[in-house]
Length: 260
Image (cartoon, rainbow, N blue to C red; front, top):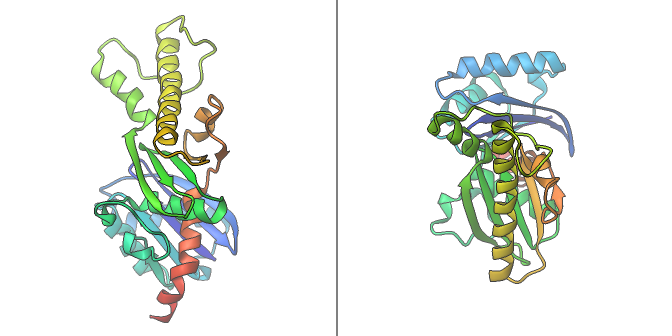
């Protein structure tokens, strides 16, 4: 079995693969102050609940965009798993040219998504990840990573309204019945959901205008399904794209870890 761990700013997502099949997956809150032992308590409880035996884990692949959390999770991996492990870096990618200056500044999550997108779907691709930040990654028809965009995530945008406008409440991010809200909550939901939909459509249109290729748009992340239902520019929704990318990278790089 392969354990994959994606460390994000809001959540840490874990998955267990048997071959190409994702058997289990979990999402837990990212807590920067948590120690290696505290992470193990969390992971062990998930394993026990799912009937996963830690000693049967044969490899571990990790990606992270939260440097303060990475050492604690890697320490947990070293201490509690008798398995080789692999931490994704831009240097890990040898078969995907990266047009970024410098390449090491590309987030591990964006790299992993690009690897999975190329492997699972035919380029050219625009990959949108609705995480703490919303990222757009552009892959050309030769499989080259051309760069992308980073914008505040939809949750950050909604939270900013609550925090910076004294009379506006914290809202649930769901689709309202009408574009024109009939109360404050509906007005905020409409503004955030439909406004973000317009943002997606506008950015995708500009990418296609500047780079005229037959792109397909692939979406992942927590709000991909919600926003994907509002626009026709999103062609594919793959909720587990990042976990798939970690599995693919393990298959490409894990043999090095097993032999080291």
